[in-house]
Length: 312
Image (cartoon, rainbow, N blue to C red; front, side):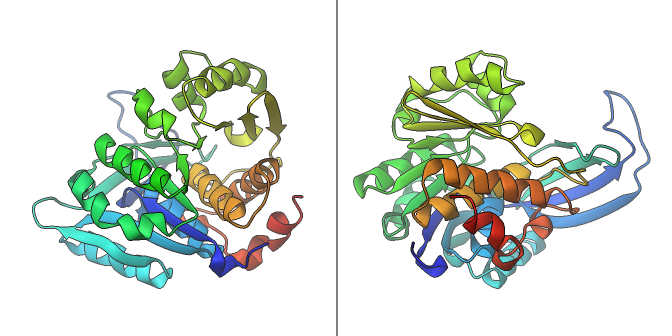
């Protein structure tokens, strides 16, 4: 196995600032609720996945755009504090930083999120091309759908030229061009995203099978459908593996999917086989829901070493 620092991961994606309100339940349309607490934290799926991999000790580079405002300045400082390469994290002079208002149900830990992309939409294909060296020197590149789709496509084209493994987390849920899926080595949707991509209802490991096989036919080498507290189902060729999650009482599920993706990339970059990597990713994601917040809930390597090294 490679050492942690030799695991090279590039994330081309989003940076958000999370505005988190804890509420007695998720509000219905037209309903006003009184929340108990409010927090501001660092988020964005791209940033979260980069931070998770960096917390575990990987060599992580980020390609992103921030607004020239206090949110952007603080996000850049956070990247540097986490040890992330920020050469291609640039300021957008015309857009505000991305923000994500989040409501968290105090009872169940479930959440509802609204994304306002802001400067993330300023990451153009040309900006991605400027980061070619960073992308092609990585073992794994991770992308999501919180930047322009043409920029994600450009990143995967550049990665494919150098044989870099591509991971696509198709979130927030949207229809995807077949060209992007054909460039995707590993596609990781959750239940909602899998349903939108395939038209198949996904709420159990059994019902995930049709969706996973359907998605495989569109191009990805592997598909992993995450099922929250139920774990994940992994599809590779004709092989289907169901990995269960430990039963825990969730405090806050925000960012659990990103903890999964960042951990999976870390394990794969270290030479772990897919099923082993998925098992570790499920375990670390389950650990992350035991604390409040997004990136603040992500464990460091020493906290989860037994989950990462005992999965073979």
